[in-house]
Image (cartoon, rainbow, N blue to C red; front, side):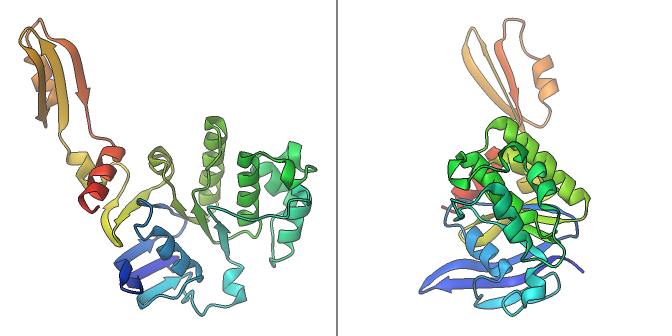
Length: 275
């Protein structure tokens, strides 16, 4: 069974098209990133996959079922970390995680989950006393407490400092290694490149590119840019063979730089072409 299989997904609001014929497939145990600017159709797509929004047309199967009509047993196999979440501010971290554990047939041990998200020292603290990044870790704990087969992560590291982000990446990799399928949305392109085996870029309701972080949008075949300065001024050359260009430069060449396009360059080009 493919955890996520989508064909021809469409959704409109009034006369505006939010999702315009998306095809998407996410494999078992895969970390897949869905990237795109605000208003591109990401949130609508994710909400349809989670069963929170009705589609207009198209075939959608999540863990083998239509999410719009799937029941409680299906929902117990889904973990969701929303971009923004409300919480019971006067409960402690431990009380909150234990409370949510009671919603699932075979939850993880709450203490184990609190440790996994790096909040062991805050287990007895009330939610309202936590920093923004710490509250985000609580959101993640609630998303994984039920041992989900499929985990939706919507901007999961918002508010994290660089060290906390790296620790969280380790957690995500360990979940995937244990067989959890993960669909990630993020505005941090380095996060997508570090975590995702594959990704898709959505703009104006359509998938405009898909592939691995190293080859999406023709990235692997993109030309390098060589720049240098000499007595006649600044020079720039785009080439498939930067080493050849560099070897042929005159001895007085200064400020030499060789730059290959990044995932960010490709991403900005793709969404700019559709804006």
